Length: 83
Image 1: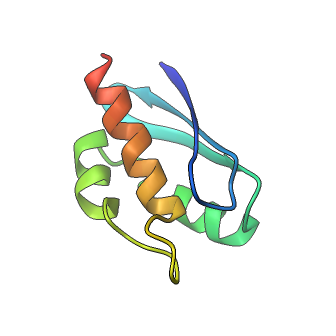
Image 2: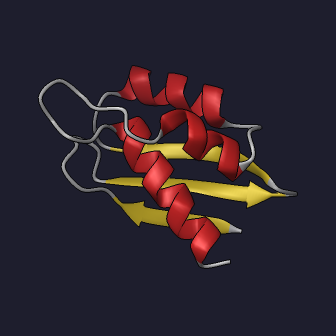
């Protein structure tokens, strides 16, 4: 299942991902720091949504309250809730 989430308070405008057979796949961010997003995607892919949320939720970026990892966690939580 493909999911798209409009981020809030970070450089990336949107994060998209698929969940197939219970694991996160094809993570991509639109806008923001390309290298960091590719690294984050590589780390998150293959995890269950619950595991990714557990690891990424609450990470901040500098003085911002959120970050791209945190926004991915929030998007995954929304996915989980709407299944």
